[in-house]
Image 1: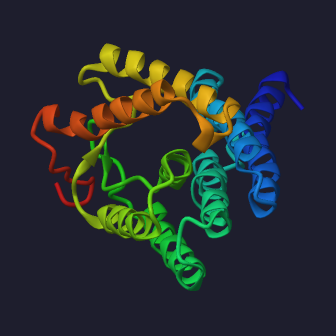
Image 2: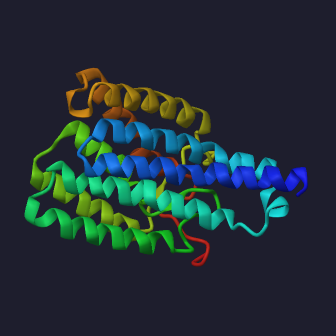
Length: 237
């Protein structure tokens, strides 16, 4: 085995380690231990943030082409962004107990369709429709703890937006206001870490305010996208 192939396989293994981290988070979600669950999901998010850069730098499509890095990344993301947070939502008490399981199952099925949609990304690297970041949605619900009816409404509306051609920002790849977005992402990350350290719902007012303000920035950013907030996918021009 050549050194370049070994490096390519190591990068794929690094990506796959996100699934191991996600499985630990899934165990914690099932046990109702949501703060440590998000700590492990945060570690998986770090892996997801850097593995693409490593893959491009070490040219894994050439050095280890028998592993489909795109498929691997989608498998890991579906566990960490959809399955694990939905288990947490089911166990959290945020939804009416009679509705929690069917709602989570429906959201999971809809998210599977979204992950398979070839129009998921636009040519300028925005997401087309809500990008199934249920880890973020559930995180906000666990920090803010709205009433069950409000939680249900938010989940259903967000799920519907997976199939609405509205742009959602990719905070690391979108060029529009990129420097500002990176700074806001850093502030959001610091606030999220503080919220996890303070056990989510017990987080201070300032931490919650920072999360709300930075979240509002990400939701408003598509209004400043060149061409507008309506996002066409690769197959619909």
